[in-house]
Length: 176
Image (cartoon, rainbow, N blue to C red; front, side):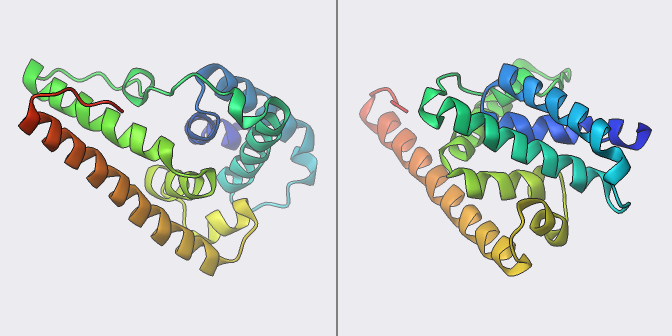
């Protein structure tokens, strides 16, 4: 059981991005961890993190289906929930916060199937094989989804950047 505790941060991170609501993410992780404990006898070894993330992912999608995805109204604030507090000058802190918010908002605009593979690969540093096992898709599909997700994220970020530049040039405010 102790090896699964080491993966709770990864489980919580995935749940936060899929649920886009801190409270729901915490609930899903707790329920998933309890499910993992109850099912531990059936665990055949291998990567405990991938096994736990599979349970968390399935729990998230079950919860989203129950709630209906349109019921989600609370935005996830990566800067607020990251837990990372570093001492830096105010200007640097402001710039980093703006960038985090931009990336977070852009990532939130992605469809769930793209968002989940990006989070697992880029934030949780899972291998393509681990992602394929968790999401239950072929490894080639993981690679193509990652490629499309990265392209779409880049387009979204460029769109935000262009709107910000236009707003700066015209003296208007940027509406998200």
